[in-house]
Length: 389
Image (cartoon, rainbow, N blue to C red; front, side):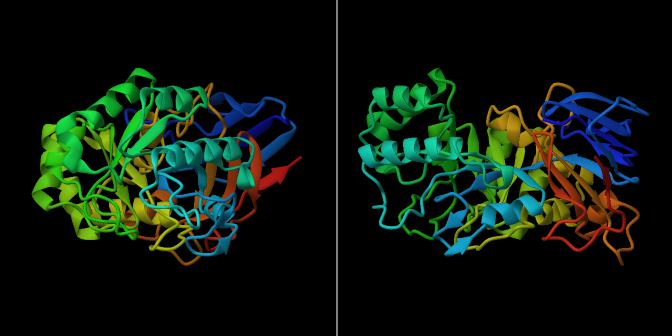
């Protein structure tokens, strides 16, 4: 794998909410790993990329996606959607369940749920569309699962389970709580579908009472996917729990404002995640992650470098994955972007703050340049990288 030196970076966003901006203009990469970050680095490299003052951010990590067949989604009967998302700056997807398999009975029986998770995990382990890291195989929790099933998925490397179809009238028997305990003993994160029913019409409604009873790690699309729980329930989850809370493109924009008021009051920015909850009824949104960062920055008033952390480092930390951070020893998943031609902004971060989407010039995954010059899914940035091999 060729070594890479990126020089003349204008602004470097780390993805780490504790230190979102770093005073550095250069990144040196070997074997797909960031080896050095600093000012004026001059290591000899196989590929030298002149960022020409553009902004570098970690590759975006979609906290809530629904992959099914490789780079095809039957939900929208569309090809190459993951490739398009990569051109929108996404370098990793977290599956919230492979729900759109044609003919899949909903809710699935326990054996089908386990089999589906294993097949999805193993397939995406062997396939990375356009280089995107698809963390697939999320087990959909249904009544009747056994502890041995959790051993099976843990052995396969699955690290996420999700309540969406579980019949909450069964809560008195303690089965759901046992699922959470079995998952945590094996280092598996627990997500819950929150709010009203989804497109399937089969998902279960979950507000504060159900969520606090389940005790998940992550409250999926708390602002709606597409219908959120009551506003007071959202506020209570932020104020009274320590769960991660997820904002998705498929949800209720007004509820994002309510959520972020509660987050600000609690200083709980480290708990906020960004995803799209696509493909699905909301469609395919290659710029969905960028748009959510833009909304938080320009409408809600979150500083753009902090909003980017919610779409990168926060997501990796919530899911127990070493992704979403630009620092030494981490995978070189990054995006170079700038304001687009015609924008009144001064750079990419100012674009987000003003409500303009930036243009992408470079997307890199594990040190490999997947987009070089300009993205197919954003207008051209004012500056583009110069890549010399």
